[in-house]
Length: 42
Image (tube, rainbow, N blue to C red):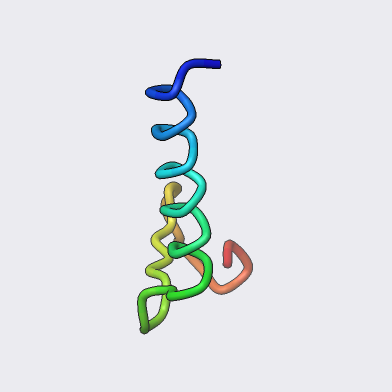
């Protein structure tokens, strides 16, 4: 493995760890993809 690909891999790994360690606050938005006509559709 070259040094450049090792460095890129290390940066990607660090970014992934940071993403999971420091999640963004707030709720995830949920939106229906189909038409909701009545309560049963939910």
